[in-house]
Length: 190
Image (cartoon, rainbow, N blue to C red; front, side, top):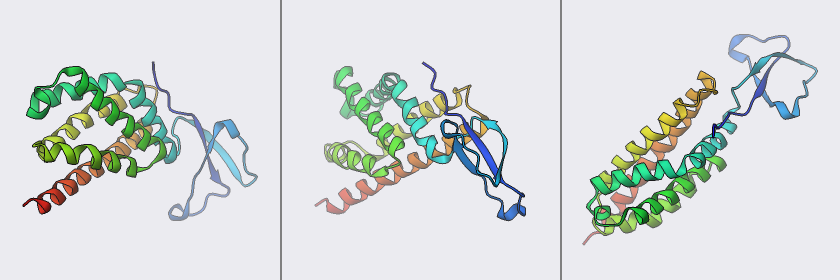
């Protein structure tokens, strides 16, 4: 299944103000009403920034099993904690992670990811997993999601760039959360 970005129409105020003060209004094409002081400059597949998150969420949900299987295989190769477990339960853990990530993109709420990582990763680090290994898994996940975004051929180059920026911002936030959890646990260690 191909996940299409939602079409939008861009409007610019009339007359066009000086460049540094120019503003562009983006309207959903489903509610296609042109304000009296605006002109249509063309339809495009570049949604407002707020629509990038839900599109990324749908992309992740569409490829959920493949993403989780790839990350589970990497975790089993790189982390002793997961190496001895059967593949199915490890994949289930990563399905849950990607579901939380998709929900965070859909709602633009990083708190969901923070809560999940606090609950799951803290326990794993206390059990002997290294925070560095989790950060390596973030890099592997980034590459897989980036590939999906770049493979969205129906999206405009600007939309792909916006989606990649959004995804990388979330990824950097996840790395910071993991580092914070690790530092907190190190400071509590006897």
